[in-house]
Length: 452
Ligand code: GCO
Image (cartoon, rainbow, N blue to C red; front, top):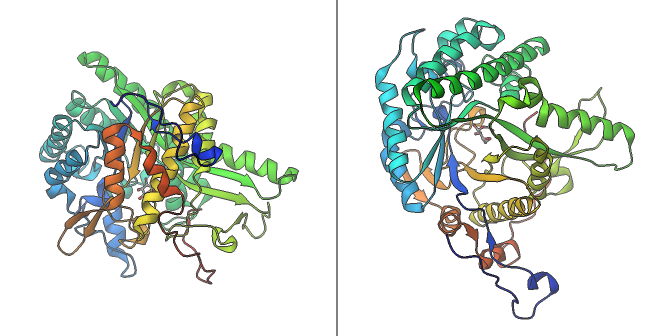
């Protein structure tokens, strides 16, 4: 790693510039990207998402996606060339266990080879066991609304951890359990398309049980086999929340409750001792305008206030990640940012987003948060669930017709940051006006796409 060095004065500029300097990250900080199986692999025909996509002609089809299942070797080679030091991806349960209790060894061999390649290329694999999709046979049995899903999941976990545990030590049990429960069982826009509070709660509860038991099970398997200590956690979709009216008691209370549900409830349900680290995905910032339960419209839309947004209406708000990180310090555990990124076609915006969020993370580290890694969502453009292939989150641009990947400018910026383990001072300039700011967002009547 480059030696720590103060840069000092920048041409006698303002006080602010005077203190600008290279921002160094802690040694062994992980610089990675993230994907999930169904979003990139292609042809995941045995899961509930595939079936859901076929059921209505209006729904986008994942189809070949990015063909990552076939192209993983060149994708890993690209990460290596870019100097990234970690890769977070998920295992597709329905490939590994296409029929209940029937293991597909070729799928395991595939993932083993992907992991082997990563390790060989100096890219630490971070493996997610459940990222929104389920084998169709599990859905046919009532999915996560049933307690039996927990047992099926554990059987799968036992199998894959037994097969891959010698080459992996960072595991994510479930990705964004609250988002999964809400989108699939309350909002109903993901399979199985239900809208029931009771089922939402049951699913959330079963996912919490699954995490608790998988945590214990993974540790047991490693102990028994004499492997190195594993580190096990889940990823939370964290949200930074603020009250629009600072002095309203109702708003304050509402924010407290919403913050607990979004950012802390899963950790509390599963027990703090069942986590080796906390992992957060950060995209969302909401300002609460009114705690008005009749209309169910609580938050100010970024669009209404002409705030800067991504192309799918998510507000760009770097300070939010600082606040969430400081809030997570209370757990006294290492922290990973397992997803952060923006859907945009503007390369200057993507780059500025990356540097501005990283700068906030740097400051959170200075303020005492033990952040160990940062993963950009995503390595490449991919299938964004009900939004299909339109949002472009990738550091690599994907041409879905030819499957050709093109390196975007932000990929090179992350590459330099990763190779030097710092944000070089000159990069901070992209935060000012040296790169043209994107045009102001015009208000429009189109309803913005956002998570609940
Ligand atoms: C999620 C998932 C990813 C998304 C990404 C962008 O947060 O929903 O982990 O699968 O694609 O976050 O929305």
